[in-house]
Image (cartoon, rainbow, N blue to C red; front, side, top):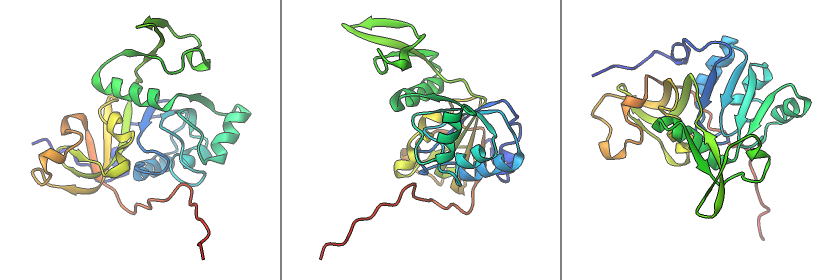
Length: 234
């Protein structure tokens, strides 16, 4: 069996250089590869293009890379709870490409499946469609969207074995699932790393063939992006 284990996040991101394009899993703060992100922050790599559903919050997740101006372009579906992301976008300091959430997911999945492009009705007649090929199918207009191209995909899973098989838990599957295997190299950080054969084959979401590096992370905070409460009824 091929042993894809690396010691830690620092070793996992070896080879990532300034100017590269990265896919990073997660939705809000759910299922983000926080150990890998912290290693990128410490590496001082700059001019990154990051593809992610959003950019975390000001002091956590991709927000840390934004704080240090390590991201040149952000490809996401919304700004979210990140005030610094909003500030850099409005000031023109950051190149931002906002993409409909379903289209963003499909552009990742298409890359994973080796499909170069696809047609979708989403965004037709809006700014999203500007400069894109249009075509009619069954009486409905569609636009052509191209699959993403990235050097590295960084995902976070609940469990994995050292051959790269991954199991996600609950909503943490989100963008981690279509991003695994969607780049030239996929890095997986997991909460628990086990020996091959210890995972139920029927529960595996991503086969090891899609993963090149894997490591067991530590000190996961699992923050809540926005805590809301309501008054107790008496």
